[in-house]
Amino acid sequence: MPIRSPRIRRRGVLLDAPADSPARCADCDGVCCWSFPSIALSWPEYQRLQGLGARRLEFTLARPFLLIENGCEFLEGGRCAIYPHRPEVCRRFVCVGAAVEEEEGGEPALMPLA
Image (cartoon, rainbow, N blue to C red):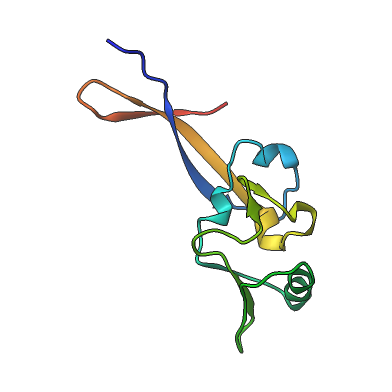
């Protein structure tokens, strides 16, 4: 019987406050940059991203947005190309995961990642 390596099932969690740490993004592969159709921005964030060359910005009467459906335009090779300048909501996003192994009968068994 072939040995199977566990798959990783990831999901995002939005924290109450920013948690800057490049280490927390080391294995994520940009899940947050694919997980939403858009993210709300403050006016200063909108202006900052505009200055960084963002082409997928929207401005509504309610607030400005960055469209990230089908991937954020600043995602390069699974990493944020503007990491030090990313919006506050991006600083609050944390990717968590669990290893998934197939049990007998084809049912997945979740194991938390350390």
